[in-house]
Image 1 (spheres, helix red, strand yellow):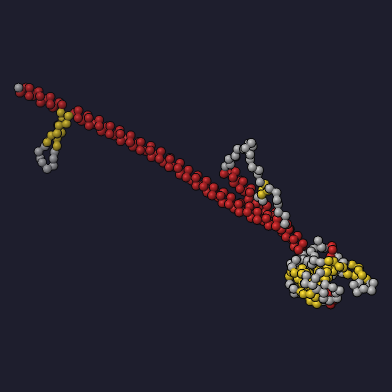
Image 2 (cartoon, rainbow, N blue to C red):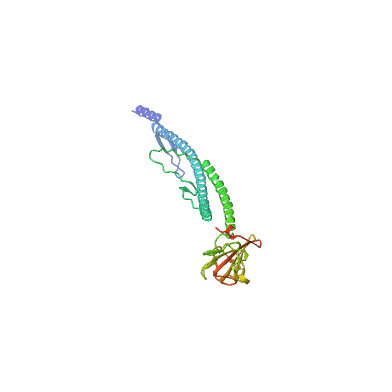
Length: 313
């Protein structure tokens, strides 16, 4: 029996190990017995845990690298998007400015048309030709997609074209205004309505007796009080009683041209006053040396009387 007990003790000592615990407080030692199989299990679990931890670390590092690359790509896309947005905004502003320029050119074109009094009645647009409508039988050409550089080139070319056209129209306007001013100062309209009773040049003297005298103007007869108008723009240089002409008005039109209106019943302008073509300056009368109600009308060029018929329309 004692031998069997001894063998069992030996067997137990082979399959178990004794761990000695030395508590600091208690002097007595205690032993904890851990089976070898359990230790192996614990070691295996620890190895698996370490492997999983290392795999997690590697996966986390890879995810970080991927996230960083994606973040960089997103930042680049954001910058490109902002740059394109700025370009589009600049193009939009340029388009608005071009539209305003074209509207200004249209207004200038309309003003020129008013100056020349020749409105266009054809089917055209002031900004260019009007395209005819496309019918169902016509083939529609595919639209060309332009990139941002092509659009910039188009806008730049339009800006240059607008400036050139505007300058050309301004020069044309100045020329037309100068021509209009010259026409406005040319005595080209009749001073009043009525019958021409005496023309320019040699004539039988209205005093009778068979004599002839030189008539430096034309006489237009009508009722007393008929309006008399300035035949061109100019400045009144005389508005008074003038010898045989009676109540007289003289107007200086520049370029050496002066017109005279005599025998008026009433004067409506004063010396130094500026008048416009067609403005009423007096009323027809029978003052001065006159044989009946009429206006004596003269045109003098550099002080010499000329035939008014060469100026009248």
